[in-house]
Length: 336
Image 1 (cartoon, rainbow, N blue to C red):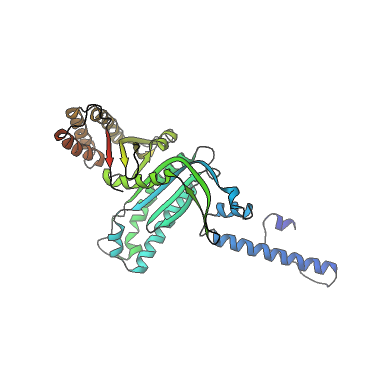
Image 2: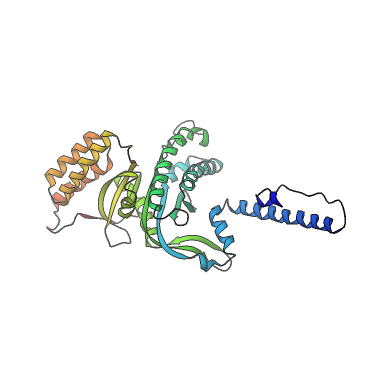
């Protein structure tokens, strides 16, 4: 009994008699067998639903309403750039092998930083951070560190792409774009009497999905919302990118590029970020000449800096069709 209490379920008592002690030993062995079966079920479902959620559902004994609640959270979406083109190069087995290996890499980092995988959508990943899985308001910090850890892990993953896919040439570059947004959500079980899922619901979910797509515009890898940047500012380095409206939303969003952990910013990127910030301020004041000069300086620091290229093209358009004097620098992005 002491061994089972400590979690050792490899116990089997010898049944040596048919009296009360023998019946007690048989009952004890049956109990241990049932406990083992429950653990096997829990482990199996833990591969489909995060084990922490499985434990939470079991603890609530099926009372789904008691674990539905509104709370702040950070939502994550990621997507593989050009995955349709990549999949056309692969056999069905190779494509599944590629995705399984990729999902293993990113899931390890998400769970390792207290995140919950909500679902896989084709090649996309949706995850979230919230209490009780992330302590207090650390959900934004945990999510940012998880996103950076994924990008670091993907460097090693790319080195194995030829082996994983079986491609000897034209091995894809395999770039993953990520979006993070923080806000209030409803967290809990949703579904029918037959089938349910544990998920997050709220407008901020759509925002995170849109921010992942905004990377396409700026040529960036990780874009985060203003609230995410504010909460994680002591742990990560960011640069403000723009003030935008996205498809399906009318309120402008201030968005930031997630660069690295605090203390890991190189002198070149630090200089680029400072010049970019000054250029962004000039752009919002409609000082096109100064903004053009500064964004051009950014390209001298980093030749392929996507955001600087975007603003130089945008300024050329605005010179031809100037905005109103009370323009707040908001740019509308209609595409999803």
